[in-house]
Image 1: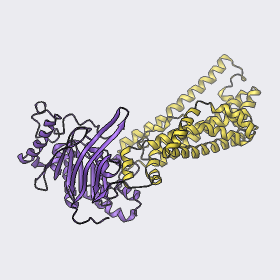
Image 2: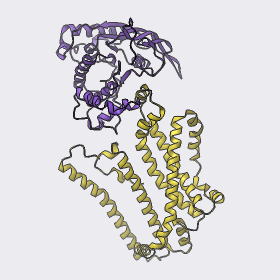
Image 3: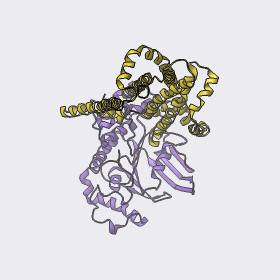
Image 4: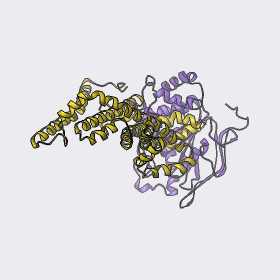
Length: 289
Length: 277
């Protein structure tokens, strides 16, 4: 909607962002001193132990919570409320059971008070582009977890936002489906070149998808390191077993080992496996329904 | 509604058999109980004014059906008016509770506490205030049907996940739009739970209202038949009340089936609905 002022290359910038909230047992510092710039069209992942505040950071970016320190800017404008130019995907697909796949995608349009008819064709095209052509009249309960999450992604993209916020979108899916979703998300991203903030527990997933991986510390969440991933695109699954890919995974893992989040002695030997490579001990969230 | 998924013939056949069983078994048990009743009255030679035989009740039902039908009209009216107003106010107040925090804090605890008050105890007072007419019975029916509706609706409106609400807020949609497109449809299964309890309670309320003071209605029939030791008429009136309750419950269930075919309780072909009050 807004044209970006020239000379401001980044879509999202964080300037000393912190979040402290009060609980019964006193104030809890969830995030502190986050300073980061995400250039337009970049795919940036955030990995970190559970409770490191990465989901909070995403909510702050969406303007759904307010930070207690610092400032977030999107296209140069401070974030003070919900960002209309963004789309969100959660770990749970949060589809409405009474709506068909198509109607679920169009929910975004309806909630925004836009003309539904004008987006119908686009919604059908989006569904087709994620492999759900012919499924537009199905209800969520008739579809698999992966299909449901694809619908949620279409719903986040139907209004053509600049910024896509994804909070562990594949966290509730099985390993094979995750791999497929990774490939498909990359294809979608290469086609649309949205700015993506992607939260995950899986280091290989972050490496596979991202231009940069932001590694965070446990609470209070801070940026420990930012790892650039300079692998050629489109990336393919077989690359995940190649030394250059594993070097990146290893680099990030070593950061967690240094933090004491990971101990290499009890977790050696399965470095190659995508399915097993999620951060040990952090997959505490339950699966889908 | 549910046949979007291909069902094989064997599955359909099994489903039909389950449905037949769901009706057949309870009806069979009921007939058996009636037969036993008839037998016990005959064997122990129980006088008719203490316990009439099912046959005697049936003959009263058939000979007196005009009287019973005309006395059903005011009762049905009271039930429907009480239930309808309980539905409107119950859903309205539940929406206010989840919308305005102040209202929730101030009113919701009172509503919960008011449930410790037996509403039926107000029936004599309502008689004083509103007289022997329709109004006092409608209010008793309303009072006891209202609470299950308001509580279930509020629970339903609150059952929306934070993520979904976050998504809705990210679009800057108004509270009313979110209510209409997300919260209310989400709450429908809960609302229907409340309505099914409420409609049953409304029948109780109307009859109790008629007990306390009335010149017509099935509650009045019960009182006068009791005075004459006319137990056959008493049982006949009870039978009519049971049928009335079942029909109303079935009507609400049917509406539920039509309005929320997507809900998990409605999806299977099994008759999960037969768990009547």
